[in-house]
Length: 164
Figure 1: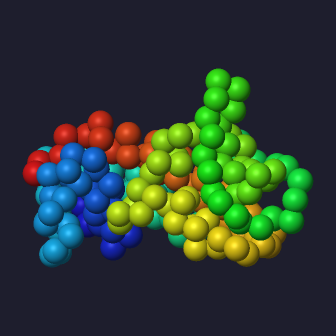
Figure 2 (figure 1 turned 90 degrees about the vertical axis):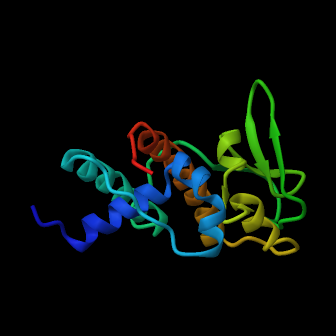
């Protein structure tokens, strides 16, 4: 079978989101082009390609997962003062100031790193001292949902045996 460029890109993207691949090639990924291993069968390639393509669409914000996460709450002027994550037995919240927060933010989503940056912290710290507009509030909610989806997809990708 001949695969399309999108299917090949999806496969590569899935491989780059494999935890075992990232761990094995961590140093190499920082300094050079990554080696992309082949899988042993077409079905594995196709499934990984599908998972990778779904990730691409989510990361481009073309398809936002419909998760009930990152609900914006509280009273205030939307100013990012000091981002702060708080988890209790009753809630998981990402505060932007003393009174406003995003509700239902799983700890693994808050802790998620890409390229050496803790995604949500970096996004909010870059906006510290500013008032978030409605578009930015929506974008943060979408980022929370996409990160949760990314973690879920990475778990599925990690179930496949990838020759390295």
